[in-house]
Length: 183
Image 1 (cartoon, rainbow, N blue to C red):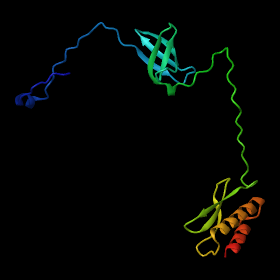
Image 2 (cartoon, helix red, strand yellow):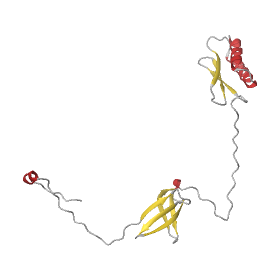
Image 3 (tube, rainbow, N blue to C red):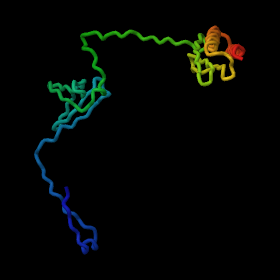
């Protein structure tokens, strides 16, 4: 911390005041070790420099939530690197790696086999039919406040529209059929 210096008005008029140089004490204490990591390396490494010599330690997940570096000398040092940055360790070289079951994702073409679902809108007393594939958009709606059908019959018409669409009937044809049943 620098000492406070009182400046009088006459000294400030002549130019900027200069501060006395602080006294620096040099000690012969060793410098603390400097560490850095190479997390993109496989396995991840922790490098440290002590007194001009460098050594590298392999990082592994620690029990306390932070990585532990194991050096060649047998020394283990807990670091400030969180375990989440360290990939899970591979099994020892003598053991075979566990085989995970192959995940197969079955995808169907959008127009090959269509699945449609029906939604009932209570406030408007109407049915909306939407795709369950591709963009999953609503393809048609029918009913409304002017329809004379009760809820149960409106749902039956909606189920029939979904069945017809799954059989391959064009959307316009299914919509026209549903509107003829409702009005």
